[in-house]
Image (tube, rainbow, N blue to C red; front, side, top):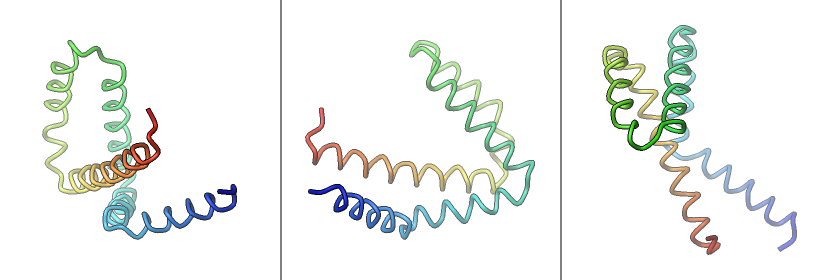
Length: 110
């Protein structure tokens, strides 16, 4: 397959992903969250901290850190806008993970 063919196929794939319920919902919820600068800043901070401790914490520490992290954010997560965003982001991420895993499996990439 020539480069042009897989670039075109990739563009079609991206267009298909952009039409999914998960992506559309994620974009809508993200835009609503961004309307409140403070909320958006808090969401970004939460996501950054969550990513950092997941990638920089040893397996032995992870359970305790996750527990403390969730306690710290328990009240904040009662805001329906927060959970709407986090749920939409998770659904979108899972869709992308499944898609990537299917590609890797189909390509027999080890």
